[in-house]
Image 1 (cartoon, helix red, strand yellow):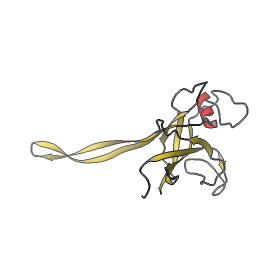
Image 2 (cartoon, one colour; image 1 turned 45 degrees about the horizontal axis):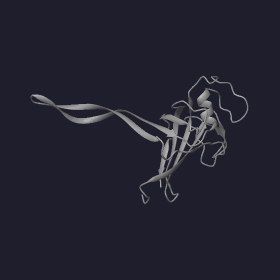
Image 3 (spheres, one colour; image 1 turned 30 degrees about the vertical axis):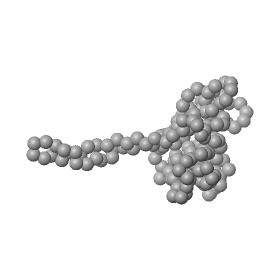
Image 4 (cartoon, one colour; image 1 turned 90 degrees about the vertical axis):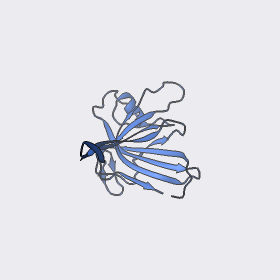
Amino acid sequence: MDTLPIVVGSHAFFIADGTSFTSPEAGTVAREAKPDEDETNWATLGIIAVDGGSEIEPEEEYRDVMKYMPGRAVLYDKILKSSKLKGTLEMEDFSALANQLWLGGLAVTTGQFNPLERAAAVKGWLKLQVYDSLNNEVVVLDLYVCIRLSGALTLSGEVKPSYEWELLHSTLNTGTLS
């Protein structure tokens, strides 16, 4: 990988389960149905705050395999029992998704909504585009996630929503390294 070692900018996009899409062909967003980058229904979450608390954290649980020697057991191997990937995103922009998660409404972009109307977790495809200081794309991730706000939103001044997400299994989860 011939890029500078410093990530200086990232963008995030989201498209929720149940959203219709037309590219690469007509379908409805689901765990095993993902639109491509040309789809116009990707919602822009905005620019990820450079100085914020955005991160991706793997969690793995291992089981020890012991080999029994005369007189004692020694650690012989490790078996991966489970793995998770979760992350946080601190955004520079307020979005329709932030509004939906903040007040528990259904997905709307304009008009009236009803707080606490949503009765299910918000799941869908999160697209993260990571750039270096020369504006070269370094990494693109397409992740099927469950997403929520990670804290309160201020009613004055700068509104910078923070999201927490957890990766859910999909055969369409991908990452591209440039």
